[in-house]
Image (cartoon, rainbow, N blue to C red):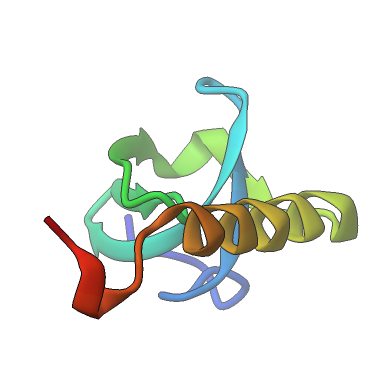
Length: 78
């Protein structure tokens, strides 16, 4: 099984089994590797995914913004 034309790398999706949105990182047959803005990755079955709603995409954007704010500047890392 290959991904349908509506799913592609970089697309925001919602994983029904994990109950959270993520971004498609790669495909491996019926398994999809997803990533969150924090860098958390996990695998999900292709059939458990659906395109993210506008609200879920906004949630990912807000998490990315929060993650950027919480990271120290590059020159100040310990």
